Length: 112
Image: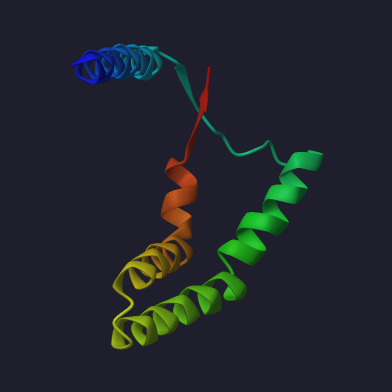
């Protein structure tokens, strides 16, 4: 008889813990943050030189295109081998590389 009471008390403690955890997660998700869009650095600055090399010449250039096509080929190989979840991730990465110019223009940073 006492084991039933102890078991019930443990379940009540677990329920209180999960309720408190759910409230904490909801509070974290409902907090607001300021959104600020990332802008291209001004021409002639040091940051622009890094942006030009990293984005314009590598990501949007032939290296990014070849990497995007290679990702698509690799995703096709994974799909043929019935590895659907890894193939989906590789397709998303390859699509990011192939459409990097659109992504770079619309990317934003969340700053809280």
